[in-house]
Image (cartoon, rainbow, N blue to C red; front, side):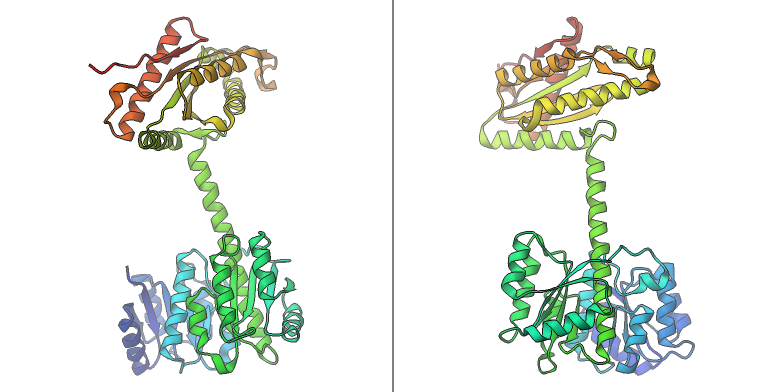
Length: 462
């Protein structure tokens, strides 16, 4: 779906010009001539980006930018301000993701927009809006920044100027050192790279290399360009740089550079936090919270995958379904805390016994599943017996809430493999049939006195 951009400018000609330029790039564009209209459009169209132009009749652009940063409905929407150099710092301090010259060329404007939309899709909230809105910041104290400049003198100047304003650890590296450390897993949180190091544009090649490496692809990148080569700015943004700065950071540019680096660092650390949260959520979705084993939601699709691999490779796999014997009596006599302790301990023994040989999951209640790829009947039955013996051999200690002591636990198991009658079936059907046969074998083990392993007898092809 095409991104939606909201253009706000007090001059009708500016709004029309910007709308034409953005629509030609296939963006959906809404316009507003007043701050009041901007806020109404914000709630009506929920844009992916706001482009804030010249003075609006009912609000100062800097004050409006700060108000948007505080607005919960605008949280996460990047704001680009079009303002001259005198107002650049004010705009950045107010929370703008970028402050661009009103006369910026179309190529650079579109590159900025593409970069900010890319960051927004990745879940990184742009600019300094979080600070202005009082949102929680991930700690950036002691974060690491690698400086790759066109000369040792320039790198030392960057380190001195930025080190006075930012609480980061600055390291000076040449391109080979930066790549070597990234390959070894010692990546920086942010890289400030000169666009021209030894030759024109070779800093952009370094950017591309670092962006392609597994360890450094999630780092933040800022490119510093010489005034003679500003044509590289748009290329740098499209290659993945979060911002571009003048290579000479001295004078009045130091504070703006520090704000830009801090915004990029904040975005990077927020991205790290979101990725970690996504991984945790994925893990929680796949695992049983009590035992830490995989759950049914993960195990059954995994069984279908293993069945598919076996079908392609003309190999076999085995399924073990195990159920604790008389588990209801444990809950009834000792309480659910005791039952949870038994399930957790049995899960640990299962995981320890199976190891890397297969996948262990809790299907629900007191029922467990083990999937063994590349296994035959003898291997599967032998492992099932080892599991049964491991569970029976040592009593399970009960928690103090249940009165302490210990209890003897046994389990029954059903073992099944693909049968000749499964030939020609799809992977999911094969997995389901093997699972059903293992379940029937488990029921037979229960009926024959429990605490035993039964192998399912495959149906024969007529």
